[in-house]
Image (cartoon, rainbow over all chains, first blue to last red; front, side, top):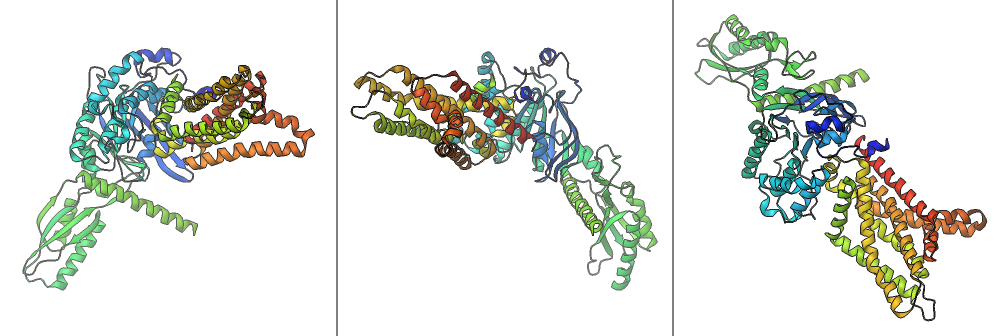
Length: 401
Length: 237
């Protein structure tokens, strides 16, 4: 217990493969292609479950975006990855090191930029980087070069002798990033890195993040970068893979294309129906009511009918396929228990729409479907999780009653 | 040793803030008052016993002011996250903070050497008890800082950390004193054993007792370990 309170035998960077065997009892960590493996991790704060059975992986050379609304559990998950918090359940491995069993070795592989870059305002930039280099065990001989490289990488050379408290928010963010990359980590975890930056600084930051993930002379496989944000355009512009979290759970995971394709099946159908000339309002309302009922039975979640303009024979409808909470998690890009499409929703609704329209004695003038954007997917996932949670809580209340 | 990296940063940070200089000035002022009122008396022997006898109260004021920000400030500013996210164990963090604070206390004591120097100019005091007295003050200060570190680990409020430490230290000494007066036979020995003030008095008389040194060092060490455990428990909260 006492020894575990200290840093153990970690000296230098335990992520350097050649040192691993001698430093960790001769046991090489099991290295897969994943830099971070999160396996069924949950975190409770009292009775509140902030992170709920989350599994995900972060691979080298890939920028993974952790996307979710405020309170989704992103920061708590990141704090567990950096061993700042211990998970209540599950396992986190960083470069093969268990974050609980070998916290110091796991932490040595990570460079993290915490939300709003907390720094010591009284310290000078160069002084702070020297301190961080010491904490991460960068050898004295390599320290000056590492600090110089970090200052150059983050365009901080001009302010190296300034006090951190005198710097603007953007510069402080850069100091945080410089400190995170100082020890040449294999894994970079960035929590809301662009918060408070202006557009030009955001553009520079994105470019720096892409460069850090790319293969380099020292890291031929590239670095694994996990970027947490609730700002969708940032994730879309920077990340190769996306993990969407809501209410403590992973709701979707994959490349932006995979996710939009998967959720694209929930995109609404745009339908234009030709009504018979001279149809009165009451007959039209009855026809549309019948059409709506047929479609709802055949897999539609909602049918919106726009009022017909005076003298027009065309009626525009928007038909949304049914989206329900999955329980089996059979889809590869949609996590278990996440909001996805039911069997009804996965079926192409086009045929059902055609049959319903012709069955109602109407003719179909146009049937089209727009591809879902990531924003629509995000909103659908977040709102879906809220509705699901409300239904569960209502169900629990009813059971209790 | 990463604790030394933390200690170095902690020590430097005191001198980069007005609070650090204010504490040095306060320490000099308090000890100056003790020197002029207790030592510089016409016809009194050239010793600093009385001077050191007032030090427990100066320490009870200065040590919590030094220790209050050790961890509380990290919690408040959020810098605890990058600190605990670095490959540094809780014991290294607690030890580094403690050593940094001890270093600063030593820096606070350094200018007060002007008083024994002044005494040496006007008289011929025995330097042994003066050296021993300073050793006692430093050791008692270490103990007080370790108590302050524990409270600082428990709260993000520096004010709360200061007040808790101050009232515990002062209350403990006063309670011991009162209990000894009430039951001198039963509690006299125990009081002498537990009171930092009584031990400083022994040092000030020139008695460098290893049991005193061991008491201060061991209790301080356990308190540092307790602080490390508090930091560990915070990970599991």
